Image 1 (spheres, rainbow, N blue to C red):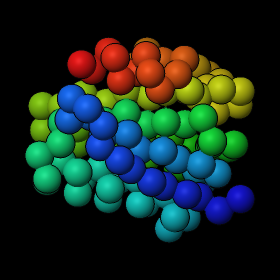
Image 2: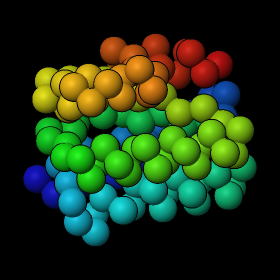
Image 3: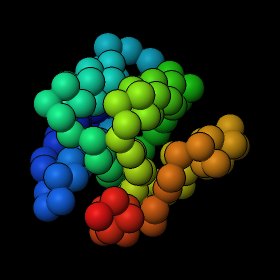
Image 4: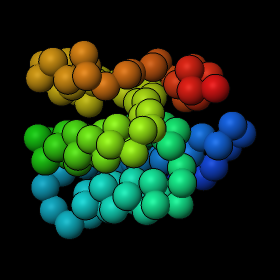
Length: 115
């Protein structure tokens, strides 16, 4: 499944970025970082990644989220991760990055925490 990235603004100025497919080494995953930079340039400071549709992630994919988190923090914003399951969630746990990123079981709770 090719990587699909969509975003939408919801109430409270929160931007939800929905990612589906494989977040792996390659040009496709660079869109994550560029989209975050674009949203920050537009003044958005509350970002939630909906990872429910992500089937695989490698170290490069995790690196895309680390770079995005750094950009968000530098802009004074907040970034949450929602609905990561299985091997995707385990990848963040094994690397102990689940102590750096704020994970929520579903999109609703991730957004509620930013309101």
